[in-house]
Amino acid sequence: MPRVNIVDMDLDDDLPRKGDDPLARLIKQDLGPLSMSELDNRIASLEAEIERTRRHKDSAVNHKASAEALFKR
Picture 1: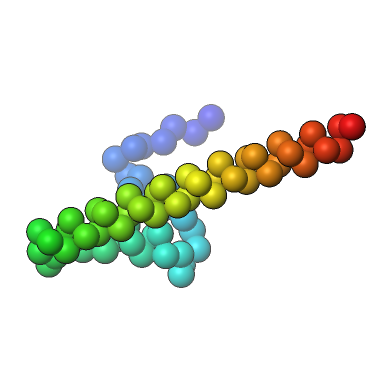
Picture 2 (picture 1 turned 30 degrees about the horizontal axis):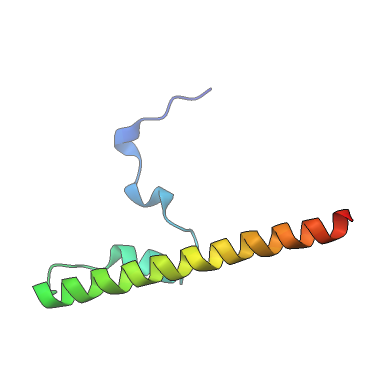
């Protein structure tokens, strides 16, 4: 097995590969120019998006479980 030199790894290796991926663009955005208020708004928006994503995931899991239960009958 080849050895991997962690120092030579690009930190972006774990980012999504799709060039127009919104998450990749968001992660790479320079936060330096943002004011404290803008940073607070960004954090609130990201937290709201995380909650929305969690609700969708939970709904998808529940939907899948319901479908599996239906077809097991």
